[in-house]
Image (cartoon, rainbow over all chains, first blue to last red; front, side, top):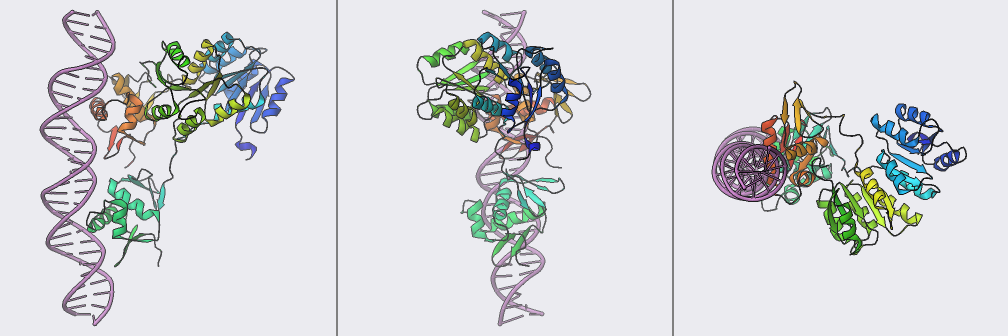
Length: 225
Length: 225
DNA sequence: CACTTTCTTAAGCATTTCTTAAACGGCTGA
DNA sequence: TCAGCCGTTTAAGAAATGCTTAAGAAAGTG
């Protein structure tokens, strides 16, 4: 992973020893920018694009709480972690209610700080299955629509989607009607159902997508010539 | 994301004394559901709609870490706070890296816990400045009215607003009735409620806004043509 | 407490989708 | 070429799903 892909972190810390120390500690995992007073923190926070911020409480030029309040009032939604020596519960409540997302007291454990930063920056995208490519089309994972490469989307019925998905599962393989019946239907229907749905699909999408192999069945793709 | 009602909170805590105590503590500010083992926690977490969860580490039937891992792997993004006696930094790292968003050790300060829960449930950016666009309409941040592009404003009931907001959260995605039920209702109602509210919305706004996907559910946006 | 609004359920009707079947057309091999 | 099989297309009844309406229950309000 190159440094360009590292998350960006704005560190607002006035302590001349601790600031560089934390910056160095986080350097392998973040692109760290260190500023040493609240005014610079506000400026960077408003103008830059940050994945996460660490803010000290007691800062020259602008208090940490005031800094966070100012950022939030401007609509800055970046996750903020307060890192301070003030460990009193009331102080924590003040900091969190000002808009901070987490609050860690000095002295702090490096591993815990790192884990809390990871918790702030990670996201939980719902598992999205990749769409299946079929020639110039792609089958939506819900199997209820296909989209051409130029944006046109065609809705499918459930059976149409299942049949197309079954065929697309193994391109170039020839499926017999019985195989497709077993895959998409209840195996009690007439094999002729397949023909009907193939026709529906060809009309909706394109004649060329599903190929007939005379005497055998159907196929997606042009395996043999 | 219930605006009118209290935020919902799932508390997974097996201690027979501490569980009810915490539930009572949070009762004024949250709609608290208490379960006492991991299996029930998983079931509630997957099927219910929660604004935030509190999870103990050591649980019968399913460990807290395993519970969080399972929820996250299913795409559940609900903020989770671990509340436990295990205060070792390594334990904190394990819990946070499993997918928790915060980690509080017992004994805990009630005010701090409340503030951390507020920080987790607070949503940035605040819904105020960004009305949700839905075709020719935009949904008011309060979720209680929609306004057409030419100024006409239609008031919505709470449920209507929640349903519309849920659908608008991910345009072009098809939501099943069960998903919408979990998002807007208490998951105990009949799925047919959704049909009724879709009908109300279509009559109030416009037929074209909400699209039916036969056999699956509903969708906002014009995915096809 | 009475009134209004909103929520929820349920039932009948409308629409879409599924399945069958039959007529039509084209491929294959003698 | 012709007969026979196989595939295509169309149509229509059956089944599943969705829409609409209405009315009782619950919640909110004066």
